[in-house]
Image 1 (cartoon, rainbow, N blue to C red):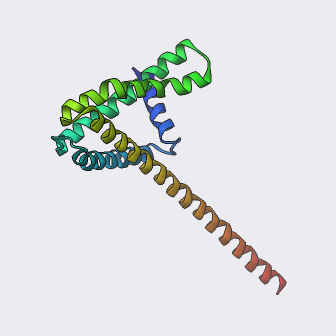
Image 2 (image 1 turned 30 degrees about the vertical axis):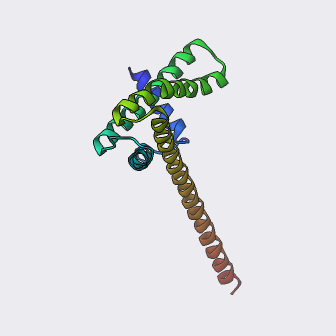
Image 3 (image 1 turned 30 degrees about the horizontal axis):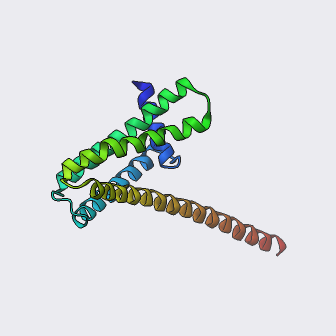
Length: 170
C-alpha cells in the first residue's frame, strides 16, 4: 500500500511539473479542481447536460480525478515491474488514463449529469484543459516570482558592492 501511495504522489508530482513542496502540491491541486469545477458547471449547461448541480459536479470531478490518478499510478507500478524501457514507463500510464477516461469516466458522467456522450466528453475535456491551464499559469507565476526575487537580490548585491567601492576610493 505504501508503494502505491508513493507512486500516486509521484504521478501527481510529475503532472504538476515537480513542485517544490507538499504545500505547493496541495495549493495547485485545489486550484486545478476549482477551475475544473467551474468549467464543468458552466460548460455543462452550455452543452446541454440536464442536471448540473454543485453536488453532481463535485461527485463527477472526484470520481474522474480519483479514477484517472489511480489508473495512472497502478499502471506505472505494474509497468515498472515488467519492463525497463523508460519511454514505455513514461507514456503507458497516460495511455491507460486516456482509455479509462473514454471508456469509464465519460459514460459515468453521462449518467451523473444526464448528458450525451459528446456533451460529457466536451465538458470534461474542457475542465481538464482548464485545470492544466491553471497549473501552467501557476508554474509560470512561481518561476517569474523566483526569477524576480533572484534578480532583486543580485541588484542589491551589486549596489552594495558599488557603494563599498565608492567608500574605499574616498
